[in-house]
Image (cartoon, rainbow, N blue to C red):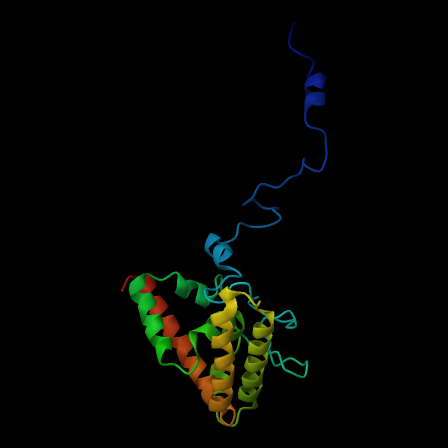
Length: 208
């Protein structure tokens, strides 16, 4: 048989349909760009707080302060990061990861709290809240206690959550006793911890 009719060839092509205009990942028009594989692996499972959500559903703005009465504090003027700082910290080499453990070993903010409230902690302006006579510090302090209570309520009764519940309950009591009258001290503490984490991250990423 001779060459087929061009019209027959045209008719054999894939007919228009849902798959006809399927976008190729990474090209303009794609529905979703590929996400960072590290972020995908770490999302929703900070060490020591598995099964707990990173941010409470009640917070409608990722940079807003949840307030026990249902209101929201002022949003931060902060650029979004491609990966959460605490996720990056957990990816450090052992030498620098040990510095992070030492940082929290003697801290009034336990690492268990840092892990379970990582996303919320990083989205607040602790340095601004640490300023004298700032009402923002009181809001952050009460919000932190409320969120800890929610985390405790979200944990199961199984053996794997037993120690975490114990640590978070103790942290909640200790933080309230330590900072209730001077919440700006907590704000200053958290601001310094985050700053030191960033310093360790820079060293680790530079191979120092």
